[in-house]
Each structure stands twice: as structure tokens, then as C-alpha cells.
Length: 442
Picture 1 (cartoon, one colour):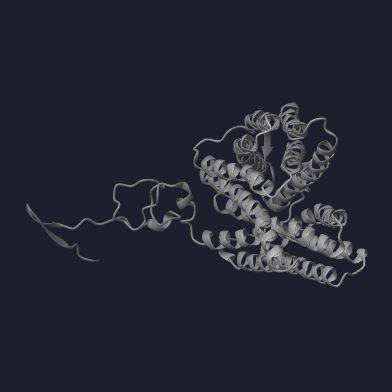
Picture 2 (cartoon, rainbow, N blue to C red):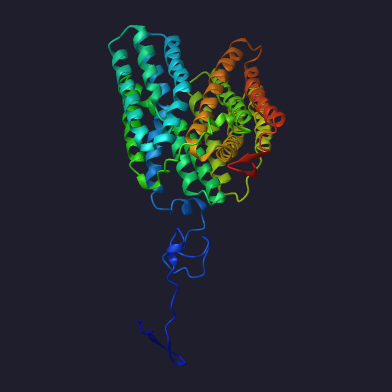
């Protein structure tokens, strides 16, 4: 038995204090809940900032870095494909049809790949799926460069639809690591949404610069390298990968109570994003259209990070009501004819976007069985993409046929109102049974 140490004090020799040695009981190496501590000299003190506390967990920085690298090309592939196909074949209609084909095929394949991820694990499925998609992008670039027949473009772009949903896999890792800490999971979901906004804000700009400064295929080639490298780095972090859940007869996540109405809300929300992009580009119609449109993503990114620091979440219907109200600002600003007013309106309108998506994704995580989490979140992404496609078509039609230039901004406002109406009619966010318990959803 070790002898206690004596230390000098003003009153004479005294026993040195001994600390409890069961720090291993806490995931951070101490036995108190994280937060500010009096003994700031201890090495296990955690920062007050919730995002810094989030990334204090082992392995989180590495898989987050890989996920960000793999997600940045999501905003690059579409713009790069349009630029290189239009430059080679002289047809934006062809470029749009080819990219739409890849989007349509992806809406079918993405849930299937996510189901395989849930069944066999992220690394085992995501790596070959990403390699297959990367090969498709390379072949598509080669076909465009060699002016291949049109059918070859449609076939090769369908091959690229095997790309795994890296954002969904990243959220699944957070859900596994923070399954006993709902506040930290809320912060993680907010960070993931802000990361999505950042990637879709920077990706198109980077793609346009590469294609114009180097050669038309440069954007696709760079995006392919980033995508494959990011997936490899992400899947290499095996310590944070969720374990494969045992197979259960739960069936599709669509059968979970409340999931189908929530996906319908995601569909209408995607129409907000797709229509806003098209009508803004049509209204501005110039080189400043991109930066003006990026302000909405910037506002959403900032709001998402702030929302992640909040200790309480807001109900989904409240977020949708706020989004519907704020979507009226671009319409009012565009009616004035001022570009600065429109830019300010888009910046403020974007504030409601990230909180709505964070709350919706958090609700989906609670509704979806753990064994089907990747598939459930991929279904949400598929619903959003379908809504974006429908919103883009509706916004384009409105931009061409509206009696006034600002009338096109009625489409995203109507889509936001539709999302709110669906959430209210089906009581999305009410009481649903999850994993054998009854939980109140946000």
C-alpha cells in the first residue's frame, strides 16, 4: 500500500490531498458533467463553447475533415458538368438533361446504397460505391472531351449515381457517439447543416473558377479527386464508425409512424430551395447573380451555427412558420427593383433555413430505427432533391411567364407555405412511438 505524501503547510506538515482515480468512468476522462470547472489547472477541463466540446471527443475531427472534403464536390459536380457539356456540344438544354438524369437515377439508388451501409457498415459499402461513382465521372469527362454520342453521356452520368451519402453517414456517426447526450447531438446536427450550406456555397464558385481558368473538364476532375479522397479519409476512421446493427424485421423507415408526412415536408422544403435559386438567377441575370444567391446560404450557415449553441430546440412547425414569413422578404425586396434590397432580403430569408433543416433532421433521427438510420436520412435527402427539381422547374416557368420580374419570388413563398400546411395538417412533430417508447418530437 503506498504511503501518503507529506507536504509543508503554514500550520506544519500535512498529508497531501489524493484525488479519485476512477476518471475512466467518464468519456472525457473525468467524473463530472462537462462544463466550466473550478480546477482550471486540470488537463481534463472542457471549453465552454459547445462546438469545441463537440470536437474534444476522440476521432471526431478526423472523420469530420474527411466528410467535409467528400461533401464539397456535391456543389461542384452539377456546375462542372453543365459548363463542360455546354462548351463541348453548345447546348445548355443537353447539359441540363444530362445532369437531371443523374439526379433522377440517384434518387433511386441512394436509398438502396444507404440500406447496404446500414446492413454491412460504412467502410465496407461506401468505398466501392464511391470508387464506382468516381469512375463514372472520369468516363463522363472523357466522353465529353472526345465528343462521344449523346447516349453515352446519359449512360455514364447514370453510373455516377452510386455516390454514397457522406452527410448522412456523418450524421449517423454523431447520432451513435452522442446517443446519450441530446444537447450535444443538437449541436452536431447544427454543425452538419452549416457544413452543407458552406459546401454548396463554395462548391459552385470553385467549379466555375476551375472550368474557366484551366479547361472545361477541370472542375469535374478536381471534384472527383476530392470526393474519392474525402470518402477514403472518412471511412478510414473506424473508431467512430457505428457498429452494424443486427438485422430486424422493421422494414423500410417509411413504415415508421410520422416518417412519410415528414418526408412530404422535406419535399416542399426542397421546392423552396430549387425555386429560389432559379428565380434569383433569372431576376439578377448577370455575373453578380452567384454572389447574391450565395448570401442566402451565408445567412443559413450563420443561423445554423448560432442555433447549435442554443440549449433549447424549436418545434418544426415554428421553424416552418418563420421560414414562410421570411420568404416574403425577397418578394418585397425584388418589387422595389433594388439589387441591394434583394441581397439583404435573401440574407435574412436564409436565417430560417438551417434551423428548419436541423430540427427536421433531428426529428427524423428520433423517428427512424437505429438499424435503418442511414437509409432514413438518405430518404430525406432524396425528398429534398426531388423538391429542388420540382421547384427549379416551377421557378423557371414562373420566371418566363410571370407578368412582373418579381412575381417569380411567389413560388418559394408558396412552397414554404405548403410545407407549413403539410406539417400542420399531419401534425408533424406530434407524439410518435419510437423504439418501444413514446417520445415527444420537436
